[in-house]
Image (cartoon, rainbow, N blue to C red; front, side, top):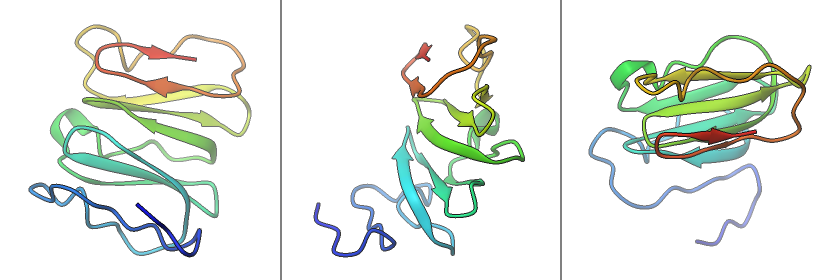
Length: 113
């Protein structure tokens, strides 16, 4: 995929749940999960779209420095360095550890900070 302008993210692939149709706004990064996508907006907030099973497309309020969408839950690093996660939490994947982090990666059933 080639993106000419960093502010113009173009999404490819399935759009069965609206996951390839971004919300209005300007994003500095995007991360795609299973039938949903989340993006970090220029104001530091996170917007998600697509399937909302278990709240995976409903990020918490606040400002973030990064976001990572996993299979059925997502996590973001808040501007204070803490991690917030949302979505499916069957195996604790949406229960972040306490601490200060620089990055987070959301996976299938586990996330790494």
